[in-house]
Amino acid sequence: MQYLGSNQFLLRRRSAAEWSSDDFAQSTGPIEEVESAGRRCWTVELAPPPRKPYPLRIWVDIETGQMLGERIEQAGLGAQFVDLLVGESIDDEMFVWTGPVLTADDEQQMYRDRRIALEREQTSWFRTAVTDAQIRARVPLDFTPDRVPSHDAETGAFDAMNDRTMLSRRPRGVEGWEPRWGARFYVWSTPEWDWAAGALHAGLDDETINDLQQALHPQEPVDRQRLILQRHLWEASAGSVVADTGLVLSAPAPA
Image (tube, rainbow, N blue to C red; front, side, top):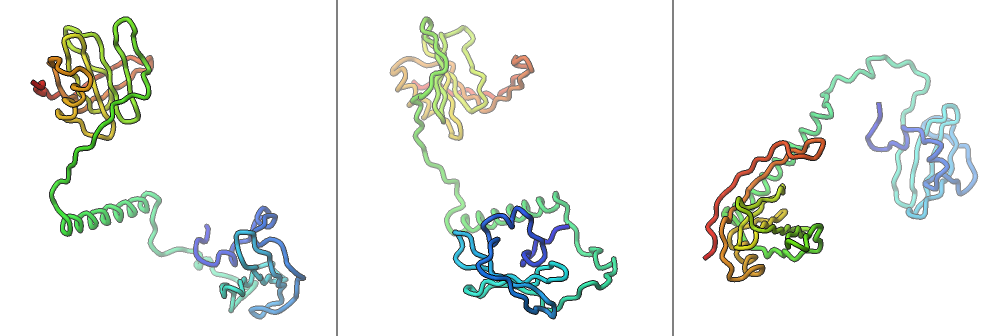
């Protein structure tokens, strides 16, 4: 059992490692014998570490070694025992907890429920005070690659990417071509090439893809364009694809 409340300095014995540190572990003067809480005790002032401004004075019971008090005079902070019994017998029932009990899972669920309730309260305020309509704005996507991990000098095929976007092409095939990406992406074809473009954490739409096509192959006819909304890949231990499913939407090619 561990006490997690305030004034732990009085209840938890410091370890040898703590006493060998610079955090209130070295005395600034002599040890004096005084009385505190009706007990004979030693008192001494301990030097603060460099990151703290003031020293700490402690009172320690001579008979038991129990910390009786601690105080930072300059800050007016401290705590001490005022009514102390030593050597008294204690009924075992004193240590039987009869209050509410939370498991670790219960506690985590409580925090989740609080967070969800707070988020709902915050978004409700926004819908009331600002707007309850969907807020959409176009964000430019930069497909300029900073990595081209694969390319074929003979065929012109390549895979290029940056931190947010992916762009690939292959020589045009009879069936078209789709990469095995786990992101939302478009595929389309031109007379010579099968193309694919995808984005992470950003929405792609027909207008964005049309802008991209005009940058890559202006005025070339486009066909077989479609949007792949979701793709799930399960890789076998040898690396082969075991299952591959996707939701495909056809999109009209730009004129």
